Amino acid sequence: MRLPEFPVAGGCCCGAVRYSLKASPLSVYNCHCKDCQRYSGAAWSMSMIVRDEAFVVESGRTDVYDRKADSGNVIAMHFCAECHTWLWNAPPQPGITVLRAGSLDDMDWAEPVGNIWTDSKAAWVKIDPQLTNFSKGIADRTPLFAAWTRAHEATA
Image (cartoon, rainbow, N blue to C red; front, side):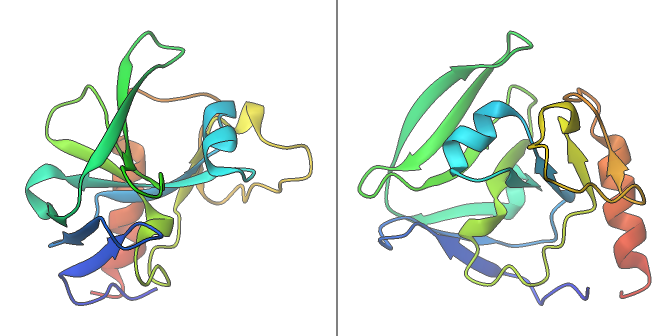
């Protein structure tokens, strides 16, 4: 899938929070953890790791829920203060934000290159073994970054 021309935009359901993404994400992947299933109301959530300097909140405000992960890390989860759409996480790792890919105005180009927490996926979900997959969470996302780069080298 060819990357779009940046910047691209996204936001919440009610339109109060709007953001722009000024450069390609580092990766896009699916998370099958139980928390993502609950928060998204689906079998997984699509995560898009972006550099902080490429992510700009243009309008609106968010409410933050500090969720304690299984790892013990505290993840600051941002929701629109008006409609409560889950928009992004601020992980403890400096310099990155984890956007919800579904909050993009156009997510056609944001095809996931991998999956994490496949051990807790819904039984009916089929995981493509050709993707970069992990049975649990991962501290080092470098393999997902490399998979994204490989997927987009041919379309650059």
